[in-house]
Image 1 (cartoon, rainbow, N blue to C red):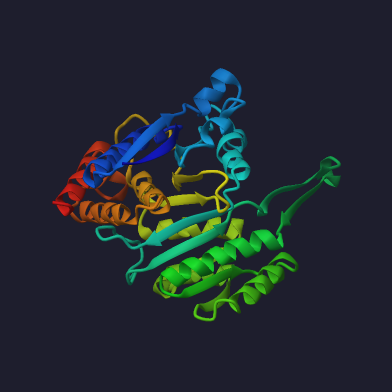
Image 2 (cartoon, rainbow, N blue to C red):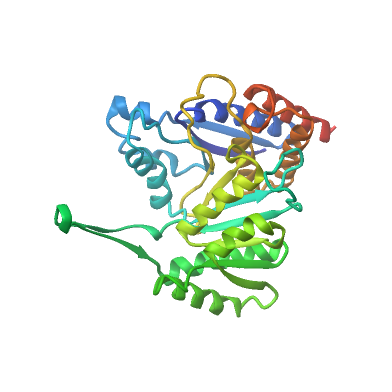
Length: 354
């Protein structure tokens, strides 16, 4: 029996609704597999936890979860309770940084049964590989003076190590897909970091002669996501550019509510973390209408990472069958509840596996 230890953090808002649904799916997968078991340890870290304790997680929080095989996160943030820079900075971003989750992977794929806002989506299937630890989101900079003389400096920090490892990951995963890697750049406007990014990309491409490569400026590449997404395979991008492109990818899929993400640790010292792209949506929390597909597709990415890709493919197929059958929440044109969508996905998995 293969046992996987998961640290489960539902977080805020609809995270507390969709995470239990995804765990029901994982339990169903364990039953289908027969030789797989999930052990869950739940952590109530959230904005409500902050109101009660004055911190988003206990002082030894990272120590508590570092021995898990993976971290399964719902959604973080409730601006009605805690400012976003505190809720995200002290929980989500802290885990990413201190657990060296240096790469963020987000798929954008035309799912069967989903209506894309594109008139002709042409069955696009894009994987965005985003640098997750430095770049434009580096906390380097500051403010001086006040009033009209106030000066604000925000430094984007790019290291050879950080850029090289995200590009190497991009090249490796492109080799397992369609063999095409696109680099997002803006070297015609950003004078130092982006020419450096381009140089590392060109240098690394020499080691992967079988991979077709191209560099596209971020403004043009954003347009290509809309006008010709079928021409894209794997896209490697800096922290800011990857963040923007992945939300655009979710939009052309038809809803950010179905988009998953993985925060990957490469050195094996710490667990990776899996979360949907959507936020906590406190305005709909408790109504039973939250879309669970983003969290459930996130579970598929976690299964792939943990060495169960066959079960991951069964799960993704079940998601698409459910969408095709018309069982959808209201945000994507249906009338089903959160639980009803999960029930349909579980039933579709069981139907596939006999």
